Image (cartoon, rainbow, N blue to C red; front, side, top):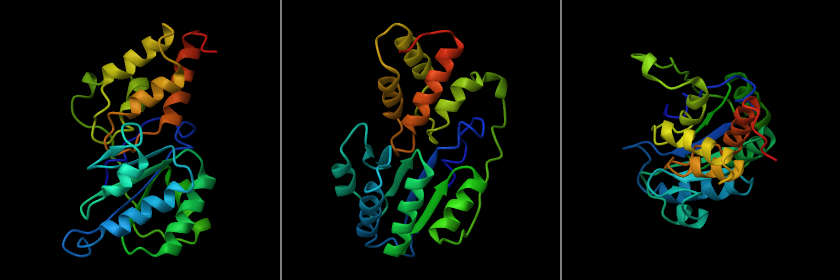
Length: 213
């Protein structure tokens, strides 16, 4: 899976951005795997992820975690997002101990993820990296906008929505946190990190000289 590989930003801004997800292999261990995927979600939920989701049901900003877990199917791909490495390591250890027999993937800075795996007692099997964006890159918005939109690997967070949230904060219509959570809603899979979004919104507004508190 590669839809979480394309998150853009500086190493500092990506430091506390981890996506962990699980899936079965079609034609190999797919049949009956929904119970294992449900258990995966139940396990990682104990460690307070900032987002949770299933591509078929939605994320925790548009429905409840109970609904997400309860509607898991054999073909689901289930996700959790953490904003600190300690929680990720604890979740990864718990998933390892559960020995669910499904594929588990973590996205984040490579060296950092490798160290998290080491501390959790997990041997990394495979490593994938993004080759970036090719084509008519001149048609893309500013990098500040891409840092938000690339947190949804299927491109469901619109460039215009990011701009609107910034304008709403400036006009006092939303708080930074409310805007970050609104940006998380269109990302069906639940891989958008609202904590990182809030930090980036604050950074942008401070650069523009906008008081946010």
